[in-house]
Image 1 (cartoon, helix red, strand yellow):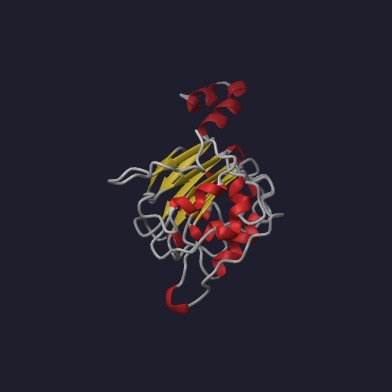
Image 2 (image 1 turned 60 degrees about the horizontal axis):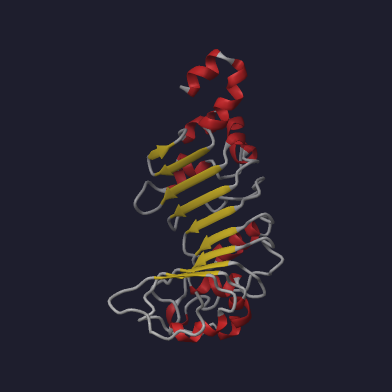
Length: 256
């Protein structure tokens, strides 16, 4: 309908473009919204993109030569994405190394579903250093067992993403991003291989949280939930994944 209106009425053309190209979702060869070829052939239309989701991993065609990944590589399409605010990326190990270089946009929400390791941290840190409007970050850090590679993530300076309010990620991302920040929301998504070390050194940062969620049963959390409850001095919302047994009857640190 919007395409027909745009062709017949120039006054509606701009509004039609805002609707048609507002958001895209690419999953392999499947897509919602305009196909990536539309932007590759008409780069100026990427100006209307507000939300972009790209999923090219082991379940989809190889990212290196996939058109959906191409729109986030240096070129006229990426240069036109000046209004993008939400970006969700899930890629495999062979994702293009120049993806997200020289991005012109300032995101509000960024999700990176590729476990960070090695040079990935430097690439991500460089990208985040330009995202001073970011409110929500979602990512994971891969720990290397048996002493191979980096065993602990470097801390992201609090001057990077100074407006960040919500963090979603595993133990490593919490260690990387949370220090010296006053976030409102933390979603802890545990991964296989994560260490079971304490967050006692982040007690002050936990005290600022207003919302906390964990995708692991409090019956199996290590360290146990009881260690964290004293830190939640300003918590207003708590969501926990329960399996079999219920929460302990006494959690003085959690308030209604």
